[in-house]
Amino acid sequence: MSRYSQTPHSRRCKSKCGGSSLIEVMLAVALMAVTALGLIAGQLWTAREARAMSLREHAAWIADSVAEAMCAPTSGDSAVRQWSARAATLLPHGEASVDDIGGVSAARVTWTSLRDLPRSDDVIDKPASCAGADLPVGSSCVVLAFAK
Image (cartoon, rainbow, N blue to C red; front, side, top):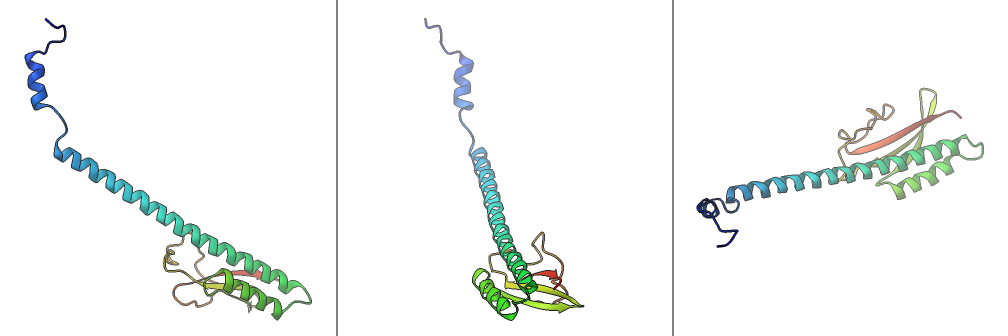
């Protein structure tokens, strides 16, 4: 007789206890699908925020360059035109300008937010206003105050 002979109990368990039920498998697949969709949504949100941050970084760089160019005695409108052209190249519908707000000069860079980017209300670190300027819906701006 074999040492590993089956007992009557083990034969009954094989016929009744074998495998997973269909409901357990469906629940596991549904849980994995929801988890995967959550991960994909998180990645998309991160990519949109990174793109929005990149646009704000370019705008801040252009505003800083405009402010620096305006402080030079020989520069003026030509520097603003050059940086506005650079803003149009780097930013969607980008535009650079210099305004005098209450006796303080300010370099302003505006651009149109892209469709796949978060709305301006959803951006985490965007300031509430753009130096009191009324911007059209879907536009963003960076303002940098400077002294001449």
